[in-house]
Amino acid sequence: IRDEFQRQELHSSLSEIHQDGGRSFSARPPRKTEAAAGRMRMARRGKTLYYLFAENDSSVFRVLETEEISDSSSVADGLHFHTMCNGKGETNVVWKSIIVLAERLTLKPDANVKQQTNLYVMNADGTDVRMLAKPRPGYVQLGSFEWSADGRQLIGDMSKGGVETSRILLMNADGSNIRDLGDGCMPSLSGDASEIVFSQPAVGVMKMKAEGTNRNRIEQGGWGVQWSPDGRTIAFAGGNNITLLDVASGKRKPLLTEAQATSIASIFWNFGWSGNSRSIAFKATLKTGDSAVQVLDIDNPNSLQTVFSSPLYFPEDISFSPDAEIVALPAFTPERTRASVMFVDRSNNQSTFPFLEQFRNWNITGIDWSPDGKTIAFTATTPLAATEWPQE
Image (cartoon, rainbow, N blue to C red; front, side, top):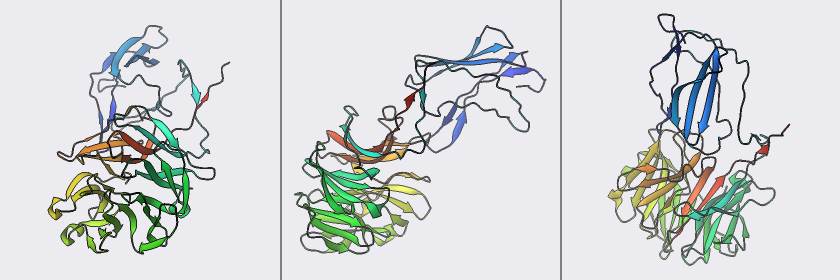
């Protein structure tokens, strides 16, 4: 780069993408050089990345800067070469050769191969990740899984990519005894696990026996129904509010007050009940255009709290920690390349990505915390397996 005095300079900077989607570049003093050409080298040693430069055809490289980075394997498309100008100007660069030296090289998977979304479980601290189930042949994704109130079963759906092809799946907590209970999506078990509520396209909110029999419609205009863990209340979304149905009496009432509902354009499905059945967390599109995760205690209409909001899309499958202090949801990471597990503390609205490095190449689509707090079930799309680069 030439400065205003027509001298050659070398610059290096770190580009960082932040939680709000903004980008910043680190400011570093330039290094003077008389070379109009040269060789650049990037070398990683442990968690340190070195930027080096050799002038013209020299074999002597000097260190420009260092960065502290991850020592994990590089991700696909993780290294880009490009040129740029600051302000008005033009650039003309000839890359004569690019050499990559690594312990192993792999070829990217075939872009035409459809990725699957599978069901996984892990300990609450992120250890012992294991796959419980994957879509059956002809299907591509599992989703909307949640635990039974006693933690012995998991229920969710399987589809070919849309709700019109969804099937309800019920299984034991260890992934055994998978049962296909027929058409439907976003299912939820009653407190005693004897009945199931679910949504069905063009039909509405439904209820049936846990064996898949005796299907009855609860509400034609409802969508995204969830049974409270204590079995006393069924909640389902419709427009800009959530309806609470008392199972014993059959009486219905809105969750949100009229004033609260006026700020909301629509409410998403896959909201979550707290373990004590007293709070609901849900994703809403606000009339401002932003998406927000809101929490409300059903016995206290004045307790409405926004714990997370974003002008950008994020998945809508939400869960509580057993003590109802943490809201868990899949949210896009600061670099906006994938969704990972986000925890939001209700006491201060502080959000964290506790497993960011662990799932750096995964796309998390849904989360549900087990009633005893020891296990987290989640659905995720994982990278297709790469193939080894052929050795000459």
